Amino acid sequence: MPPIFYPRLIRRVRAILIDSVLLPITVFGSLILGDALGVSHTYGKVALILLPIFVLEPGLVAVTGGTIGHHSMKIRIATIDGQRNINIFAATLRFLAKLLLGWLSLIFVLTTKKHQAIHDLLARSVVVHKNPSTLPAYEILAERTSDSAEYLYPAAWRRVLVIFGYWVLATVGLSIFSNIVASSKCIEGHSCATWEYLLLLALNIAWLVSLGGATVRGWRGQLYGCRRRTRGAA
Image (cartoon, rainbow, N blue to C red; front, side, top):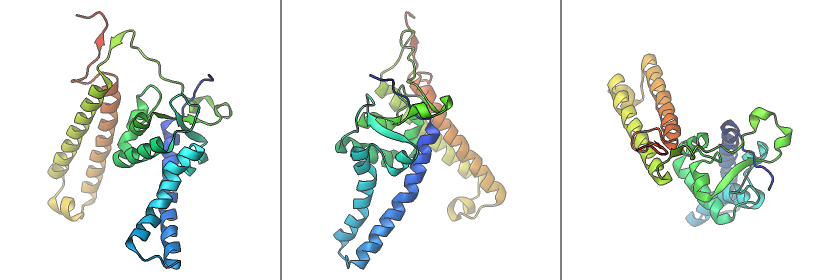
């Protein structure tokens, strides 16, 4: 089996940004076409919204190995061995998980062995380069090596659970500090002074950094609640 090479996170983010622009344009065009054809029933309009979403995301992923964004970035979604396209059921599960979890899912790309997001783990999929030989070395990522010979790690479900716990704590902390440093007029009425806006921006950046840090350290067994143990330690 040929070696599998994975893209950097930024390449996956670019693919998502391309899809996030194309998808609403396509849905809007579908609704315009429906109006032109005289589609007025509620179920008909719902179908006009859902059909292009289904075609552009799980449909294209199952049939062609990726969305338009993925193909634009010359990456594709494959089964865990990197050889085949995932089936329509896995592609649909992957899309729904990505939709539900949003950007938080992508943080796991920074720490999982095969550079998988949460929605990849659930669908048993990986994102790989189509033609790694045409890319510079810094764009090509190999599978992360394991240090399981040196450490005993908690079960994956426990690490994920602890990571989510830290996410919740970080989110609660963000809410508390935001209410302390900003006025009620800013929080409730969205009328913020410049210094309040900058302070809230800094807090949100710190929140994102803390989520990423908790994910990476949690998966590596470096957080309280899911610490790894040195093999042979008492």
